[in-house]
Length: 172
Image (tube, rainbow, N blue to C red; front, side, top):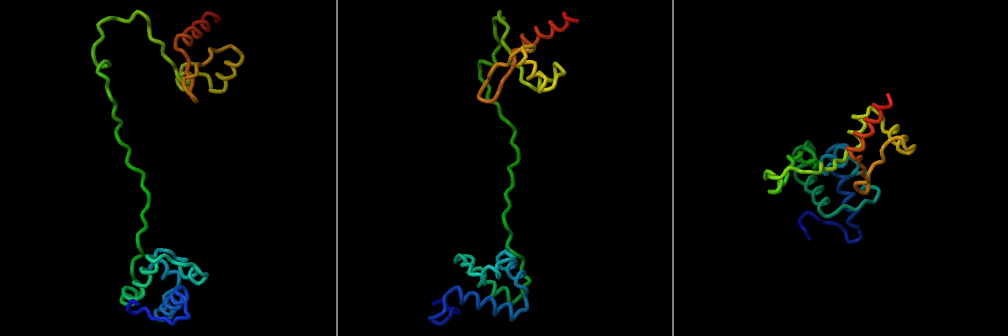
């Protein structure tokens, strides 16, 4: 048995621990809330121990160390253990991988203009229409239909939008 750990055979560890904490509180006059906060950082510790909570060995050792050493010497004026709080990592600068083919100058001019997809925020900015108006007009057939780009993304072909713009100008 460890030194200072004397108990009768009929007493359980939880009962011994509860008795030891109660005796410490009576001796020092420290409030149960303050004791729990200073010993483990848990203001409800004493209430939970009295309610039958079993502490882990590490927590029990910390409480007993507080009672036997630091608690009596300082009159309970020990800072509570610091809880680690999760911090989001700082945003990193995005690195782009450049393909060597992309960085080299192309020798031949393109004969076919590349198809460019325009996403909804840009369509809204270019047309001046709201999201819901665009979707209503697509359903009515009065606006170009979007092309699915992925599971949850769509885009409009830029040339179709340009054609829709020119049709609006002609209608005027």
